Image 1 (spheres, rainbow, N blue to C red):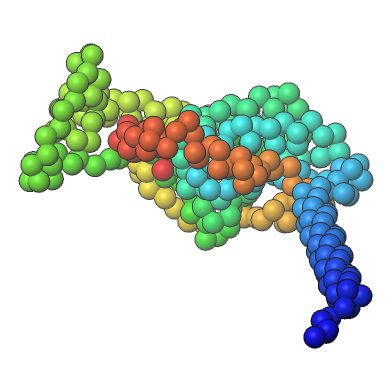
Image 2 (cartoon, one colour; image 1 turned 180 degrees about the vertical axis):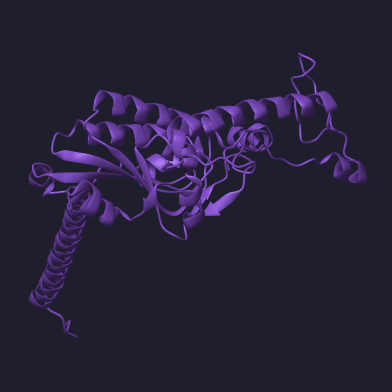
Length: 320
């Protein structure tokens, strides 16, 4: 019997199969190229969006015009946060150095924070005011200007508040927890070894030592007096001192004006328009990007950071 499939037929079938495979491969390559172009276009578009968001394209021309320079102090004042001395000082330096900025407005919305960071900012404001005597700096309080925030504000020429702003809290605190009672109940023994009899100062897992408590209170009193001295130096004869002014209490904007803790009522726009008479406001604030904030928070190591957080909660004095 003859073979129904001749050699020519087999060859034709193989050729068609190879052609189909070749065409399929080409189509697949074309599809990959198309998707590659799409993803590259999307990536390029994303970069353009980021570029336009980050770069202030009109900054050059805007800074050539007469304007009010604004620097923002927002949130807790701390070395690892956005409201840190390094950022604030850099922004203030740039604002004062700009010849077309006729005045600097420091917008404050802060509950306080580190006395060291607040002190560094206060010192820099005083230095810049001495270096640029013809360029005033006004502090404008929004929701809150308490403790460390007020420590910074008193370095300004004048302080403007809203009637409902919270102002004051001229005091220092050091807080923490004592876990030794809980540890006794659950049967956990604290084993603390130190070189130096006071190295375990205010250890939260050990019973409180009276002499340590006395020493901590001495530290707080010293920093509190520094705070009081800064307020008196900054506000001068405008203060109408009362027995409770430096007790840590807070007051409304209305009360703060009456007590001499603030000068008048105003906002960023009203101060720029009516006081500075340069209605255009440009923001000189320095802000960390997401990566920088994460790196600051992460620190040298997670375990070390955790222990540091526990110890700082007990030992760190705060203007809050």
